Amino acid sequence: MGRIDKLLRHFCPDGVEYKKLGEIGSFTRGSGIQKKDFVEGGRPCIHYGQVYTCYGLSATKTRSFISKELYAGRKKAEPGDLVIATTSENEEDVCKCVAWLGDEPCAVSGDAYIFSHEQDSKYVAYLFCSDQFQKQKKRYITGTKVLRVSGENMAKIELPFPPLDIQREVVRVLDSFAELETELETELEARKAQYAHYRDLLLSRESLEEMAGGEVSIAVLGDIAKINTGQKPSSITVDNGRNFPYVNAGTTYSGFTDEYNTEGDTVTTPSRGQGGIGYVGYQAGKFWCGPLCYRIRSSNNRIMNRYLFYTLQGKSKEIVALMNEGGTPAVNAKDLKRLKVEVPPLEVQRRVVDILDRFDALTTSLADGLPAEIAARRQQYEYYRDKLLDFPRKEVA
Image 1 (cartoon, rainbow, N blue to C red):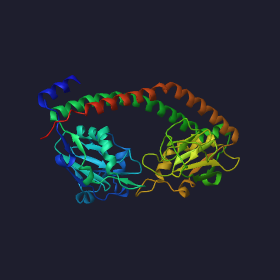
Image 2 (image 1 turned 30 degrees about the horizontal axis):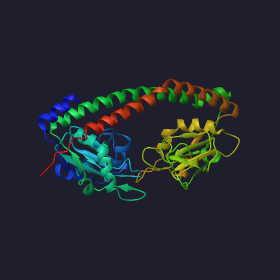
Image 3 (image 1 turned 90 degrees about the horizontal axis):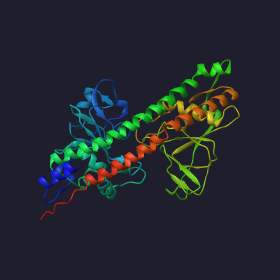
Image 4 (image 1 turned 135 degrees about the vertical axis):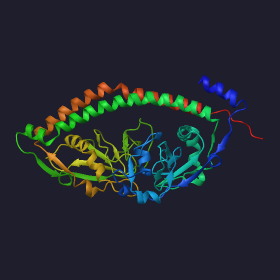
């Protein structure tokens, strides 16, 4: 921090000038690219939905490609530009961005804007994450179900732009914080991968047939389970002192409520939304199931709900593959009901559940401190990020 203070005293003795984004760059809306347009080994492109799920603060390579012919007619981000996803179903994700640092222009889909500027790209991306940007952004969000911010309104947001030397030093400091968090997340992911590997091995058809001493039947999910969505509760709070969790789209609770509409021992998975498709949860106790969440329960005595949870958890990629191609990511109930599930005898299911419950407890115990440490690092990073980016304002006559 000392070096930044020295640079500020040298370059900005009277404070840092705050400018509207429209004064330091320009916003260009992307053009139509759908997931069905993706090809192997074509020209680089970023689809707006991938900004939420596939990219961090910056990227040098894209996850997807399109044909040369389609690429030629699309809007493109030049190296150094920001790609900003400007629509989402939740406020937090609106205006999530990635700094494009590749070595060639990248095609950008609609529902995203390209921000072209002459500043340090990662510095601007960090600004978009900052508390001061998020607070200003809220003024310009429109829509109810699908939220959006226009390029015209983003151009009105006012942020600090010190000289490039200071911007680069801020990036260096914040990158070092992010690196520490990444190391912890990598270790946690290794624990999760170990668990997933063992779970998938145990739930393989060969393993189940070996435990069953014969062939294992295959059933269509809709024939052995009831699948439906819930509805919005009358009131929601973030206070976990309430009796029942509210489970909706996403991978964590969406709040808490005094009511419940679903019994415990139920499998859940998001029906639509950014980033949650494919996640499979298990609710041991009573809860409120929301309108963007499927609740799945055994409809007969052939299959245990807890076994069904572990089985569907192992089929996460198959659930993601059912996702529709256009608009908001979603999985139709009729497609989910066609998913094929291995159904061994109940005694084998009980054995599998017992083994995986114990293994899950062991893995959780080993990794128990990591999420807390990651959360502490993130809190520390966010604190210093907002402090670093909150420069003394230069008074302009």
